[in-house]
Every structure is written in C-alpha cells, then in structure tokens.
Length: 96
Image (tube, rainbow, N blue to C red; front, side):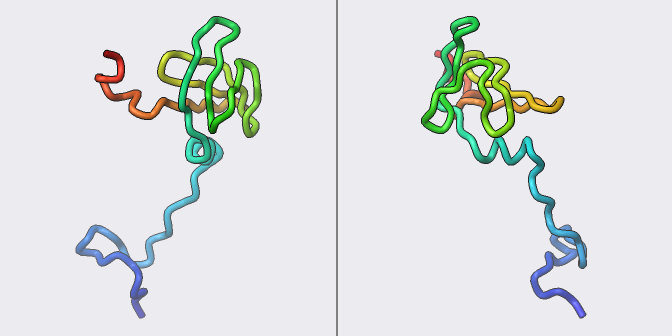
C-alpha cells in the first residue's frame, strides 16, 4: 500500500522517504532570533536582537555574544558558532 501523502517518484521523491529532520540547536537559534541593528564600539559593542540589546559577553539562549560587526552578530556555545545577519545584509545596496 502506498502513502497517499508521499511525493511521487516522478517529482524526485521516493516512497517511504523519511520526513525532514528538525533543526539542530544552531538552526533553532537562527530561526528563533532576529538581528535588527548592531553597534560597533570595541569592547562596548552590542547587537539589537528581538527588540532587546545584547552586549558582548552576554548570553542568549545558551549562546554567548562574542563578536559584532556592521552586518552581523556572532555567538558561541559548546564549540558551536552561529552568526545572525542583518536582514538584507547580503544586499550590496545596503552599504551605499
């Protein structure tokens, strides 16, 4: 018997294919948070995330803010790194 909701093989799917996996801790962090601004000021740099300011060295959901630049904020936890980017940061017109 075939699963009526599976993707047909002609579409590149395979019968009985496993469902997509859930995002790992880094993926969940990226999905859960939005970077809206950065302030680059040496040791006093900070990032505006989810309508709250996060300073270098502060924790957010188990990740520590370790770096801020003009377009991104870098967090680390347990040897994992995650980078939040400003919306449109990969748009060349943002830097004009």
